[in-house]
Image 1 (spheres, rainbow, N blue to C red):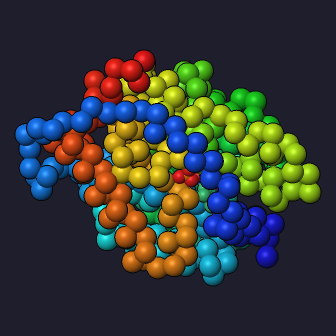
Image 2: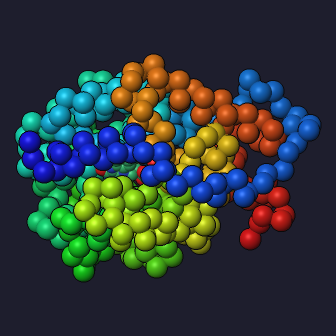
Length: 342
Ligand SMILES: Cc1cc2nc3c(=O)[nH]c(=O)nc-3n(C[C@H](O)[C@H](O)[C@H](O)COP(=O)(O)O)c2cc1C
């Protein structure tokens, strides 16, 4: 078994069994919304659907990138998530496909179109790999196996810095991203993995021609803490365990860029009310990873149950806010109570 495959298994097992790796800092609980006692609408008529990258989603949910590899557990996990995403009409991003470049047998875990013929499926690779020899040809081949609608490039300088085997040459990366955006036919989405995207990053991404950004802020799964569990010296990972821009703050930082990017929120979103707050702060899609891990290891029904819970919570929030649809909720910051507004 390759080092990358073993690392993927370690990550899944660590996150699934260590609750403290989920920071749950409650950043969303500090945002209060204005209740409407007279919502003047019928709950059953609320339309939470959204069209994103040309595909209709039943509500603005993305199952965020987690895994892939040649191990049977990882193959099964991705299939379970894909079947649930298709059945519930939500988007799915796979975990890093870099492993495919070293291990042909990992392809099976990413060949998900059979399970999800119509779902919005997004590929994934670490952006820093563009500085280590990966180019448009490799990205095309990874996306081809998945039948991807777009490609996530993840930025994880903290995780790479605290990993003993980390890839830390980040010089010139925004230029590499610009080249890739030009060369690929499908859209590129740039994300963090739990530390957030700042204004300076947004300026570079705009210049690079990127149109989709996932802020993936602090508040949920901490990759620094995950890596500290895998390391013989845990101290640096623990020190930076809470590093990063909280997701709601990162979303606010994207406000000046709303006409430049379609914004995805992720990082610590744990229920449909958190999702509604993200949409109010300008996101048109909300990504959750960890909440789908344990159910994904169980069954398609368990994943579907989580999606249905999130949808019910999200629609209930819209009802109580007096807002009839997701489209009408995006960026409606007036719904945030005055004391919590900027
Ligand atoms: C087990 C696990 C594996 C992950 N692997 C990847 C990955 O390969 N690529 C990536 O872009 N993000 C990866 N992530 C990060 C998530 O997609 C997400 O950005 C982050 O965990 C924040 O979401 P959460 O707080 O809902 O977990 C992973 C997350 C988890 C929990």
